[in-house]
Length: 250
Image (cartoon, rainbow, N blue to C red; front, side, top):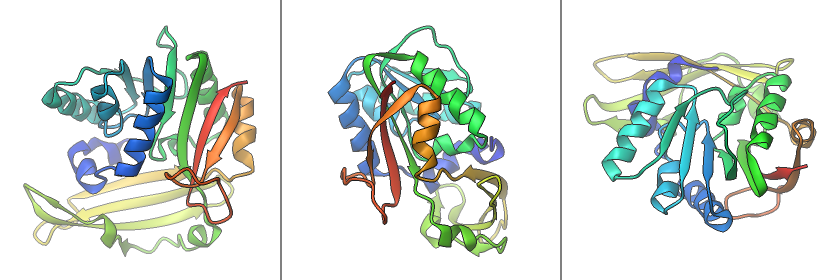
């Protein structure tokens, strides 16, 4: 688990403001399935707070107390009721079931070992009410991009942002790909003109390849019902950037 990257919750929200298409996708699923909603790896509540504002009883679980503190602040600011729980998605017991469970924004990829992924899926299955759906999104790995992870520090201009306190913030990333582990190990650098590298944080993300994904899901007691390739709902294909997976209890 990458802890220090997520100890800067406010900066995280500025760097990743949250895709409107993803938010609407999850809101639509919550509306269709109704009832209680659980998000694992909820972060600062970018997806869950809008769902709760639609009237759904919501629980958000995250490993990072810093991210949960920011989520709680944002929910209170909007007058939205959400139950926030600090916990580990690999093994949790909330003592109740949910009608819709989801893991958004590649959060599942913080679990590097196959055993951890299967354990997470089994925990999810125990929390699914009859007829419930479990949805998660992960990127579809590109062998070309993984091969380019050569450890060289490079600017990520698309992630630069303005911090009200610091001004313009640039983002650099240096990454190496560990092929046997299927894990990209990176270091992220946030800088301003007057404060270079004011944040230096590790971030390690697993890749889940398309053929192994249904097997991991099945080992967790779930069945892959649908797999989309983007937020518009196109079927997953050769050039799809995402694997958006809809699952149910097997």
